[in-house]
View (spheres, rainbow, N blue to C red):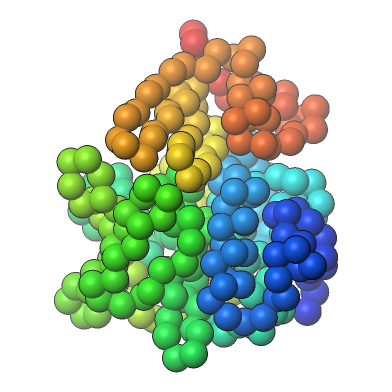
Length: 276
């Protein structure tokens, strides 16, 4: 389903810093899923730079490996979770796609534009998502009503609404905040392709025309949107600072680990807001 047989698994493991001799044998169990999930989000940043630069975004495994693994770039949800699904499938996990409505920006009824995964282990489903950016999970969590987990100071919960809609929530200093909502309907790679087309080309997509880079961390989470770098700590302390044009590339490299070639650097510099 996810073309896991086409993946260079050894290269992927090296990318995220996983050593089977040190970290344990790769088997389709919760320990392996948790370790891989945490290592992936720590190593592979969320970013939209290809979309912002007007480049096509491909979701086949070879293209994903070339970009996220070999070139050590990042990607957004369709890329990140498609690659992770291929990895999990290769190891022997049962993986299904899901499509979610992003509620984190306060929209009443946003379209289904976020891609995530549901992984089944010994009859129980686990919400698995390495592609939601700075607000996302560090580890998988049980996909059942009332589930609540604490992950390095960040607390998440799953609830169920009418029609069986699952909602992922995050606990903030001001209370619970909905992150996204999704139906228990299986989506396939072709569905991710359709969603990817909207997010990478539709005029209303928030990924067009601006730089977005994010990274969830255990202690600190960071997000760069246009020229504003936001840092959020687990105690709720938030700091914003403006990144000047001459510091934009360095910020992408040092804060998010995004490595760009010279042509990409020039294109990103041109997107910096005028007058900053």
